[in-house]
Picture 1: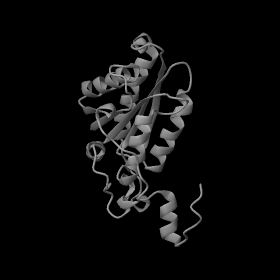
Picture 2: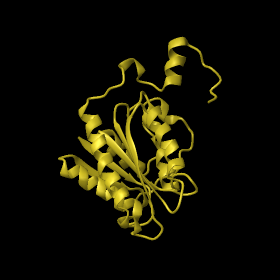
Picture 3: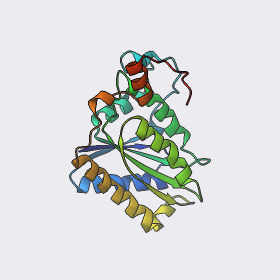
Length: 209
């Protein structure tokens, strides 16, 4: 198994990165090839909604997001790790997640991969912030482990939270277990459900949620 950790924190060595490193160390201890991408070190622009990726799954924006695409395509499991800002993910994380829209074409390129999630908040918001990630995993036909979360104010305070550290380790074991069960989506559902229905029944619908 190969796992990629995507870190959406601007703080070097901060609480979110500490938990992600714990998860990566756990993965490596089990013989998993694990690596980390720090979004703060990359230059990534927003998705401009051009839909240029719809023909071949290649984003037309030539920036450092290409490194993230390569890592996601090669990985069997992806751990998103983000601090919680205003009850949601960080801006760095959202920017990169939006750009993964290209991976929905020509079919879902992340289908069957294992999703992991690490969230750290100051005093509240982890469970609220987890919601868009769960929708993301579901939409992309990924199989998700449970979220590992913790609360910490000052830099490094998460080290005092044994519960959060153990959750990060156990989440990786869940990911490994899911991977070893060879879970797969049926081939006929290789597109998101709304596109599947549009193609199967030739009904364009109204495009609303």
